[in-house]
Image (cartoon, rainbow, N blue to C red; front, side, top):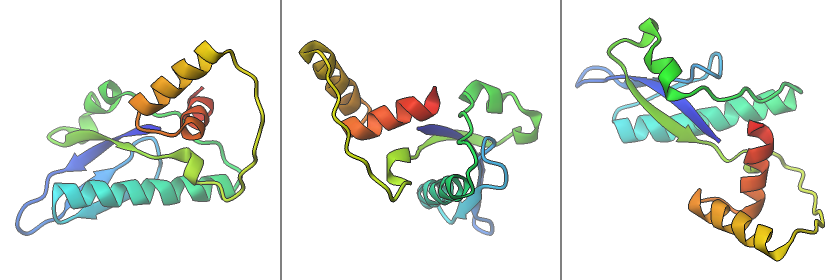
Length: 129
């Protein structure tokens, strides 16, 4: 799942700050933009894992248009961070489903195109619905 982030630009004296508008209280930072985004991915995973452990629902991700229009983030930089929701659960269940060959090929194409496994792609579809 892709979550939009607002990034407060850093400089020689200040780290880059990253905020997830859709995940209240989830933030991160880094000395470089790359480090800030990597740390943000870890922060989001931990935030989401905690939410799942507490029985809360995963929030729907906003579009970038919504956060770029928010005056609170004027002058900030924007990006999206990918979080693989299928990796957040420690319990895996194997299921057997029947699909037409054409549908399975299309599913595999879409999963590969998004850089995910078949299971990861289906999990992200479920959580984003």
